[in-house]
Length: 212
Image 1: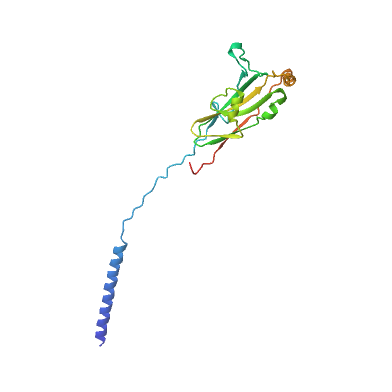
Image 2: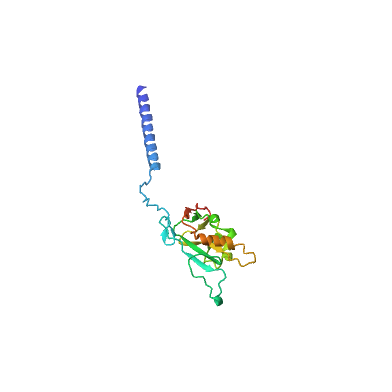
């Protein structure tokens, strides 16, 4: 009887051993796979270039003094009355150009401050100032007003140039009232410079647009 039980126990143990071996083989076969490890070269990331020029100089350099173009308001070749001087007078108009080039790789907004054209103007003498943005120099003071400069202008990236013109006009009073004569005479007698030394030019990056 004991022998029979012993034989039965051995059979059960042998069967369990076989089952465990089969299970191990099955699990081992299902878990087998290829595996490899590699790496990626992260490379570098470069900041977009920032380069804004006024004329030929960087905006951060000491900029050149403005050069004024001055012309007679009523220049007529037949009268040979082309105005050839660097000083303003009644009957003349003119402009100074500020050429700003955006060589950056981002768009910029450019603003001017310190012009204070209101204090430089003298309406009683017929002297007025304004700023405009034109692709080409204005042909006269009235035409320049079509694209009057406000507080700022956007300049596209990649070498785009925008020119801001500071324009003036000093009317010659040829009317019957001669209302401009006395104030104009005072300006000429004082012979005081009208200073534009305090102009500040600021370039600011335009926030990237998701739609670009």
